[in-house]
Image 1 (cartoon, rainbow, N blue to C red):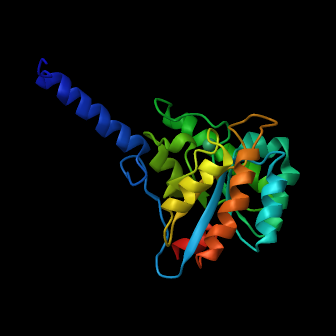
Image 2 (spheres, rainbow, N blue to C red):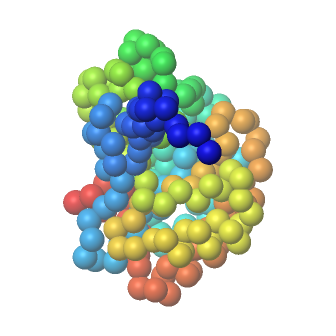
Image 3 (cartoon, protein in one colour):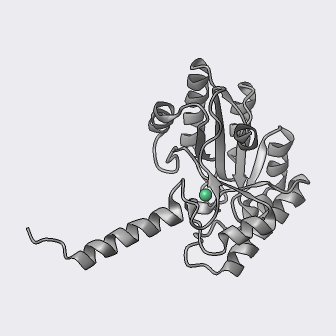
Length: 232
Ligand SMILES: [Zn+2]
């Protein structure tokens, strides 16, 4: 086996560092963010990205049945398509965060684009619910140059996750297993009540998993808080 030349090895390391800087859950390189909440009171924060959409009402019904509050990181375009769903989420006492307007990957995008895309989502959510979000989650977890300034200008706290369900891809049982086997006190769980900007996505794997995850975690003595609550 030929040894890896030092320059290639160094390039590989640099790419790895950059990937972590951009997408790492604990990276503050491009913008500050949290990836877990406070420990010590058996609280878990459920979060749902990419909504609202036709499946959001099912998620609300499951949460309501268990008296659980959650946080929804919504996309402005989805909110404009279904403002009544956004309002329903807010009026049920859940928290709404900003997940951009167009669900674009911010890597290599201009600072102007990033500012405008998240500002549009802030306005769309405020138009639908009467409240400007205080939280932001980057699509694909990707932060880039300009993200920090955008967060400051729009007064947004960055939120990543402790556990991601990969619910856009896995069946319900596997999502549930992945989440319930990994969570601990203060965890922020990332699931999805939409699939990007797809107008009518099938989210049955997510709802199926949620029907298992909530009772399993309640049995273990956890309760559910919004992201803002779990950070205090
Ligand atoms: Zn997303």
